[in-house]
Image 1 (cartoon, helix red, strand yellow):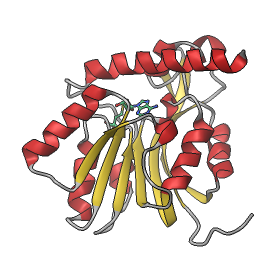
Image 2 (image 1 turned 180 degrees about the vertical axis):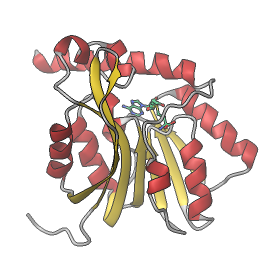
Image 3 (image 1 turned 180 degrees about the horizontal axis):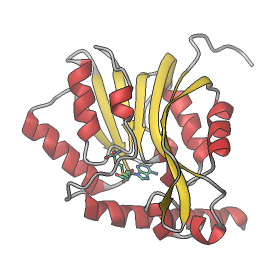
Image 4 (image 1 turned 60 degrees about the vertical axis):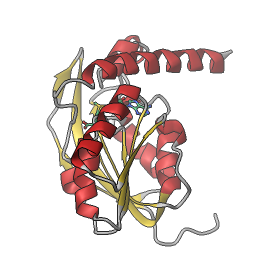
Length: 225
Ligand SMILES: C[S@@+](CC[C@H](N)C(=O)[O-])C[C@H]1O[C@@H](n2cnc3c(N)ncnc32)[C@H](O)[C@@H]1O
């Protein structure tokens, strides 16, 4: 019974997120909350992914940095965002990119296949934070790294907002606290996390949040548990 209710809640959130970002796909307004792409240090030949790639701006910037031997995937749940990103890549003649429509809870990429994952202001939207971090860990190669900008809440978000699809779609209702966030990443298997930037608290909707950019590396050697 509980699982059924959780799925309905997740579907409502996804519908509201798609409604919001369908409208925003045709605007130029800034959707980011940190400098993930600038701080990510891509190398020539890297295979990269941008989780929640929106209109594709960061994917196209990374594509230039990794060169023709590298490749960048953009993944987003909103069809119009994917279409907008594909159309820009086509107009600019950028070929070492692909945009895939998918929920981040099931990333359609192989295990141990990615050198660098970036994401900007997206993971707060995702209902099951632990699952998305497990997916991040799964697709990274050993020695692969992530640089992710996102929002966390200063205090636990009251249920009236965390259960409100509009608040979740506006990048604050679905946020978790700083310590919960770090814990989820560590449970996924990452150690030695580094915080590259962190804001002071600010108001978002009816609560206080902060944004940060965090980086980490999957161990070179992962072995039997
Ligand atoms: C705030 S925008 C950020 C877009 C882009 N990263 C940027 O900085 O411009 C959030 C994006 O995440 C996507 N998104 C939200 N939830 C998602 C999910 N569960 N799976 C995949 N994409 C999702 C939305 O469609 C939207 O394009």
